[in-house]
Structures are given as structure tokens and as C-alpha cells.
Amino acid sequence: MGKLEAIYNRSPVLLQTVLLNFKAAELYAERYGRKFWKLFEQFDKNQWLSPTELETYQDEKLRILLDHAFNEVPYYHELMKTLRLGPSDFKTKADLHKLPVLTKDDIRKHRTRMISRRYPKLLLRHGHTSGTTGSPLDFYYNIQTCIVHHVADWRQKQWAGLKYGDWYATLLGRVIVPIEQTRPPFWRRNYINNQLFLSSFHLQEENLPSYFAELRKANILTIEAYPSTAYILALYLNQKGQKLPLRSVLTTSETLFSYQREAIESAFCCKVFDTYGMSERVALASECDHHSGHHLNSDYGITEFLDSSDEPVSEGRLGKIVATGLYNFAMPLIRYETNDACSIKAEGCTCGRGFTLMDDVTTKSESIVTLADGRLISPSVLTHPFKPMDNIAESQIIQESLQELVVKVVRREHYSTRDEKALIAGFHERLGDRINIKVEYVDSIPRTSNGKFKWVVSKVTPNFTPSH
Image (cartoon, rainbow, N blue to C red; front, side, top):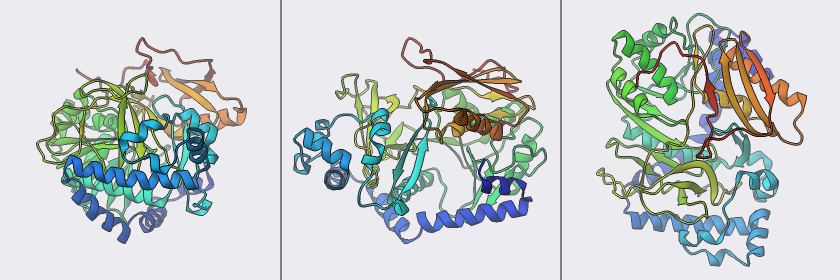
């Protein structure tokens, strides 16, 4: 835990709110304003372009990106020279196949050489992800990438009936209420962006009535949450025979399963709008109010669906997702191989948008962790202790009992006891000190027959038992 976090946790609620809003104002100045609204106007128009017009848009952006990568990024300059390629060899996205697929190991090996010479360190923004395998990856992007992401995000929020400036609630991975706190308020207000931050770490049954009371008091009409955290709220309401009518529920960061969607829509009397995206900012797919699938945001990035030989698959066939972000000139990720697989839908959406539709990403499977005090913890929350870690190749979390959590770790070369202490501290920061965190070192994580593995496996029956 850093010094600022420690000060925040020791502060009274009022001071925590001041500190939170101070940080929100700092981010607002960087991510919003004139540049945001100018680009939002463009993206608002883009959604109604024809597929052909969107391809032209992608091709123009791609040519600019590849020209920059060749001239300013050592890794891509050397790669293209080795392949006897130059910017003139890429006219359209159909030429992307001339470059090899970029793996996570490639990024780890060449990360410093993948940063553009044009961007001083002051203008770089650090990002990281752990993914469902718990194998961390960190990277950099420019401020424009941050702006583009929020523009695309707010475009989808408008599809869900949420306009910028409306109050809405979020139930995601931020630790905004100290873990040891046992009484409400389990929320803090961001007055800069009109967000009611709800804690994802205090979701035991006795606390939930206070959550719903605050949502009603604040007249919240939209909630943005992980599917698993929204499901916890919904399951409580459904089992109690209660309803909390909302305008919409936005879900992100996890696979949304059909039983979760049904429970959430029943409890909140509204539709769920799901989003597929990633911290690497290379692909984004959003669900509109017709709920026919996920619209690939073609103006955000270029997404390919490939087989095991890196050849394109036909519509309706499952393929691994390989994506190219069109705006990250600080550290371009070109033909980046994600850990996800999906398929393109043959039919378009009746909404009239020109974006290609893809099916739901269903290759991720995770479980909810139950704590002794009754709190239910989303698996997405548990990715956070891994994000600063550079020396972990893979991991798996197994909850053996209410008293013990086993973290299986495949170590990299420079892993040390310092890493272990930081990992355990990260778990205790989010789960409290009443659960024992045991780190177990293994050579590999067992896979199922399809090559996947569950990142979180809970052997504890949660307080709210899913009925599906």
C-alpha cells in the first residue's frame, strides 16, 4: 500500500471525499474538455457510417499509425526492415497480415524498444493488466488514447440512456472504502463526474440494504459494474422478492453469463448493456439497445479473428481475437494477440449502425470468493494485486475454505520474497486479515481439455447460491 493510500484509509469520510475529488479533477483536466467533445462529435457520426466508409476510416488511421511506428518506434522499424517492409507496403488493413502476430511475451521482451522516441516520459501513461490467467503485463499509452477510450465508452453509455452529467453508480475494483470499515457509508461521491462509487469489498448480506437505500436516496438510474458484482446485488433482491427499477445496467471486464443477465434484468427491471474491452486499449465491443450482439467499435481499433495458424476464420467460426489499437502512438500494439476467442455474426444489427457484430466472449470462466464475514468478492477485483507484478508468468487462485486462499504462482526469473510479500499484502488490502493467504509455487497451471483454466476456483458455497 502506498503512502497516499495509507493516508486516505486513515482519513475521515469527508477528507476521503475531498481527496477522491481532487484526483478526479486531475483526471478530468487530462481526459475531458475541448478535445474530448470534438472527438465525441466525430465518434457520434462514425457509428452511422456504412461498413465501407468505416473501413476507409480504419485504413487512413492505420497508414498514419504504421508510418509513425516505422519512423519512431525502434521495435517496429527493425521488424519491418528485417521483413523488407516499409510504410508504403500497407495500403489497407488487408495488408496487416504481412506483420507477425504480437504476443505478450514479445511485449515483455521488447517493451522499452516498443516505446515511441517522440514521447518523453512525462507524456506517457502507464497501464497494466493481469488478464484472466493472472499473468501481468504492463505497457504505456499517450493521453490521446485515454481520451479516445472515454469517448467510445460514453458513446455506449448514451446507447444505454445515460448522458454525460447524469449521476450513476459504479461497482468496480477501486478500494474507495477502507476494508476494515464495518458500518455505512460503503460509498463515496465523485462530484466531478457525478459518480457514486460503491465498494465492491463490503457486499455481505447485512450491508446490502444500506447499498439499496443509498441508490434510492441518490436517485441512481444506471449502475456500471462487473457482472459478478451486479449479480450479487440482483440475487439478493430476487431472493427477497424486491425490485430496484433502473434505466440500465452496464457490465464490463468479465464474461456476462446468461443466468447473470436474467437475474440482473429481473431485479432491476431494465436491460443489461455489456461491453467487451481490455486495458491494452486495442479493441472495444459494445452492446446497443437492440441487444443483438456486441458492436465492434471500428473507429477504436482493428480486430481480426484468426485460427491457430493465424489465418482469418469465416463468419460464425470461433477464432482468437487479434487487435490493433489505432490511437496509441506512444507504444503501438499492432496485431496484438489477446487471451480471448469469439466469432463474427453473419447478420448485422437492426439498429442501423455500420459496426460489425460479434458474439459474446464466452471463453472466460471465473468464480466468486466468499469471505468469513459474508462478503462476496468479484474475481475481477482479485486481478488488482497482480497488476504491479512483473515477475509472475501465470497464477491461479483457489479458495479452499473461508479461512484460506491458495495462490498458485508460476515464477519468472527475478521473482523474489519481496514480490511474495507485495502479493500477499495486496490480497490482505482487499480481503482483510481474517483470511490466510498461502502462496504455492508450481511449474505450470493445469489446463482443461480445451487448453483453458479457471483463474479463480472457489470450493466454498457462497451465501447466495445461483439457481440456474
